Image 1 (cartoon, rainbow, N blue to C red):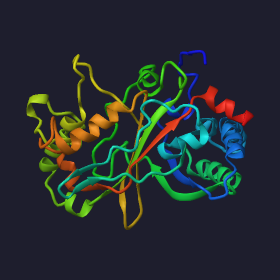
Image 2: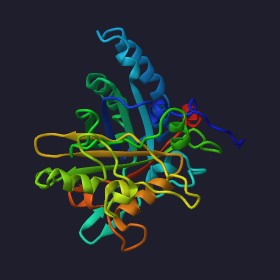
Image 3: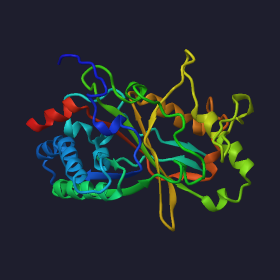
Image 4: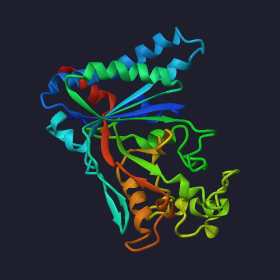
Length: 322
């Protein structure tokens, strides 16, 4: 197959679009009697369906233009990839890099499909999800549905601003989208749902919390590097490669919660799977096995861990011929 190069128009819109205030993260497994050829055809229609619904809702809601921010990203789980594309798989689409350090864990809980639906209105996300769920009903079984939402001024439930280091502008595509080859336009996605122990976290004084994060809480000012403890979250996740260049991912993480459970749905999008893996390993083991771990892990626990690949538009379009 001819090698192609990708730009920001070659990926599903939800991969690099700017952040929204509301999102649904919906995971599925294949139903026992799923018709894969038909399912691929249906998945290929999702970008057009999302655009059409967004335009329709834009005409019916009072907040002009709000519905145009509707995005849906379709991604296939690592274990299911060969079912959809038997000939070849993205080179870095590997099982979720589960971690273990004494009582701390980042488990692998694989699923077959992800729908990431986001906009600035929960009602639009719900309507899109309901329509797609009905469309896929004969082929998929629901695993989990998580409603993420913007909390205060883009803060995590811990009270700290989240996603400060996200790439901006054209850098978003550079970081998140595969640029060349068979899978140009695609993106590696890693998903984790963290549950926070806010009762214990809120017993800490603010300075203790700030030292664990490596930022001030109210002003969102990052500590100078020399003032960060080796266990600080921003120390453990702000990494550089051998050439001294920052290792980056594009985060689409969002807080979630109800009256019993609150946490963060962490979503990493990348042109490579390596940056996320290095960050997760650093959180658990520091610079090397046995180094300082991210002390934030004492107050939050990952309960899911999944690897996906979101096909580029060209590959998704080809599924219409299945």
